[in-house]
Image (cartoon, rainbow, N blue to C red; front, side):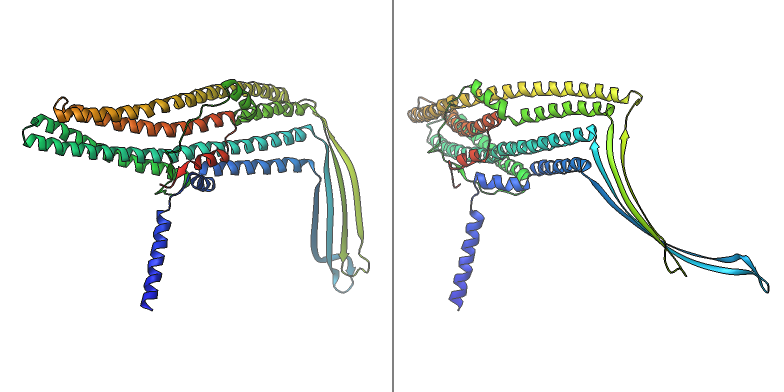
Length: 448
């Protein structure tokens, strides 16, 4: 029994440990953010609100049906107009119950303002939906930035620790050489200074890791202790197969910033027609049916009446004090402003596509150069250490070569993340960014 219980406890502990140490990949973090990011959830709520506003605008044009009912009980008593010979005036008492009910129907036949209001509500709902998609695209980039900033900070910490260990070995070797008279005390001091600098760098790098994790938590609402890392063995860069003109043409049709600006122009145009609608007449159909019943005490047959009315109401604006003209001029000015916003959005889109494209091309070339830089730095360090052993190079030369090597490794790691993010930003500028792009990146990750 004890063995069985012990096995169960050990099994649960192992399972819990495995669960806690399990690393999350990019898609898992993105899915968490989709359900928890306040910016995306706000955009979704605003899109839903505009859909409800569209329903309200439609409801104004549909039949309006109402029912009313009332009940009144009137009790009266007092002297009557007839006299009684013995007592004077006689007293009377009455009790009347009145029931009334009516049903009314109102239907808009012609109201240009209501129709324009519906058109504006539809376009605003479409614009809000586009803004929601815009925030989802932005979330992809934000999550990728947050995710890879954590990995970059972890890489920097790892390189700083490796550099510190290398300098520590060099410090010990320098001390030993000093003790046997092969080097001066100044070399020991140089090595000690570089080691102290590495210790400080390690503290800074460790803090940068936690800062990056907290930044990611602001998006997902969750602390991510362990993340899958980039597989450097299979990583490669690819130059875009299309040129900037191709991406610009795609962006003209799909860039979400541009689509939002176009929607604003369409809405502003409808606002002009809405203002002009103040000059148009309105025509409404009104129909009412009502009946009433007055039941008085002592009556055998209570009187009943009913009434049916059907009519048209025509409202023709003749003069509104210049309000309609002023509102139309205001709407035209707003249309011009929205048109300029769209022109600015077009220029920003073009700039974003070109700069993102150039950044990807630059990252591809930089990655290849930094790969060679690491190889060269490794060779330089080996040569410097060999020269130090035979006395032709100083410890300062070795320390500089060591620092150069780890700087090159750090730069190579950073360019990998920068290339991934630049590729995502290019697709965002073109308007084609989707979850599929994260899936492709996720395939290049391995458990951290």
